[in-house]
Length: 119
Image (cartoon, rainbow, N blue to C red):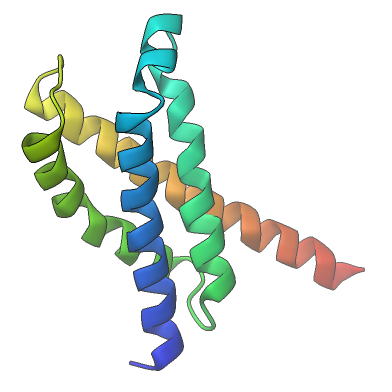
């Protein structure tokens, strides 16, 4: 594997965990009390788009791999540092939804790249 491939994977993994932790620590009260906890999922567009920017070859697969590698770490953080009102499987489903949004962010970056090349 080339150095750039690992850069995209590690970038997505680290940013995914950072977004997850920031949502759990800082924004949980605002989104939960407003009745819209799903709005925080939009922030997961950022790790996919940034990792796709840093990826050279496979701009869709590398952010997906990075997000999937971040899942066990997020689950570990969830049980060690955060208390949750939801069941374990609901948290896992929320995290898989976050992976979807992360890959959607990389698709959005690819769309912008395609539109830029067409000009």
